[in-house]
Length: 76
Image 1: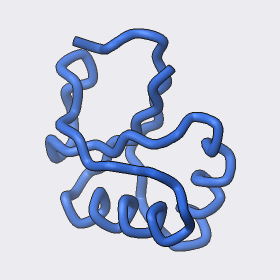
Image 2 (image 1 turned 90 degrees about the vertical axis):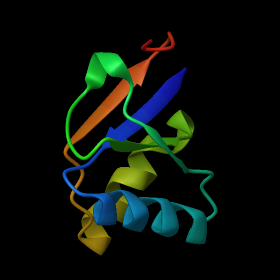
Image 3 (image 1 turned 45 degrees about the horizontal axis):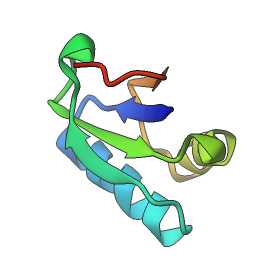
C-alpha cells in the first residue's frame, strides 16, 4: 500500500518531508502521480501505518496538505 500527500506549494512539500523525517517517519518527495495530477507537481510518499500520527503532526506544525491518497496500486 502507498500513501501520498499532495500540496499547493513546493515549500509545503519540503516542510512535510522535513517534519516527518525529524519525527522518524520515512517520508520522501516524489512527483505527483499522473492520476492525481494537481498542485505544485510534488507530493510526499509516507508510511501508511503512520497516517494518523502524520496528520496530527501536520496539524500541529501548520503544514497545509492539499489532499491525502492511499492506493494498493501504483497510480501510473
